[in-house]
Length: 181
Image (cartoon, rainbow, N blue to C red):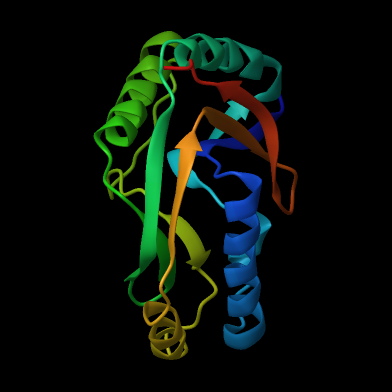
């Protein structure tokens, strides 16, 4: 059976996504790092996993039921941070509802779909601007640029999205609305 690559994420609204995409484009032009442009701006909840295409709707049903039981919340993004020597990102606040959402989602997928994955780094929410292809010798220059920028936005987390890799980029496969508070 054919498998595809998926991940689960929170996507900010279109205005914030456009702003973050502009940061990614700046990094691509000035620091020669384009990999972050292969995916829409997002906060990863469940990292990439392989799943049989014919069975993804079982996961989708779990996600639909899960989302209906979770309430929307507001999340702040504040400035840039880094995981030297390759990653630059926008930092979301460590909101308790975000942490609980990710933890509960992981448990739900394990229990309902036997979907497990190894995440040796734990859950560290962030929105990537530059990563894997940012050269170590260019990182200090890129980081000096981004760490001086001020960026503060707030958005409503009102859904989670399942993204699928199409062979070259990530596309939104389905989105699941959270319940209104």
